[in-house]
Length: 361
Image 1: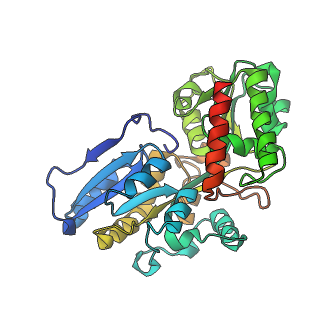
Image 2: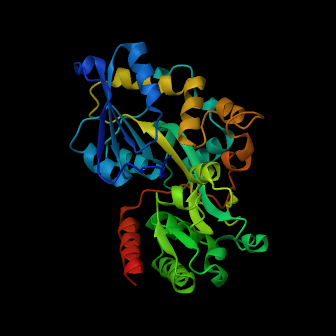
């Protein structure tokens, strides 16, 4: 799972999926985060095209951006704001959609198309689809145990994280971006705010969570700790919440919701670095991953929502993998409230400094 089950990560892991290294003409170098791809599909791709794939993983977008400046990759999976960063810094090539076989932008899920169109039309907008092919998407929200949390408290949105009733039972996602997102949204601000006054107010909002409920700061550990019932409430990604529900113990009854005030609507995408040595094979791999049967297998493995409308709709039909989790797999666009993170290097530094200060307090 994404942001997700990088359970094997803590250090950079490298999987050489074919012991026979070929020349650059018949080998493909892919860079992706954690367990964010069904490796059986790599095997199938190698057999079909008689090539070798070198699959390297990273633990964060920031690590990926740094490594892309020194190492050569043919295909990289990045989060939305990192795609923008890479494009601004001329690190990736524009996508030639004519080379993507069997798929076009009209086949993208409507909610995703909607927010990407709005992103493009923003002041200083960014055209995500000019530089990236969607891979998975979702939202951030609240995962909670219905056996421990009163349903009326859920109506409080992100404010539930301040409820002293759940002292010692709250986990807050250990990420400055997503941590501040919840605060900005609950306070009625844009999560892409560049206002120091709003950011200070958001910082105090988060600090109050720590003071009131003594929250724990967690990331991948939540994939085991929420299903095990260690916490009653956590800030979580939609795909991780689905995974947690599927793995929950008998005495745990997890649910997930996205507050009406809005959320981080994220989209990860496949990009082709400017330093790519095998662009043709990269496009073949992109096309391979977008085949409905492969996209379906990958979504089942990873647990996140496929951007391909036909696959997205099929997977929540009766008897399909996510039929019982339809309300969470389906990602609606709450226009005017949901946002995509923008690349803002100045605010990144400010939020990271606040985050360090918060955790030391």
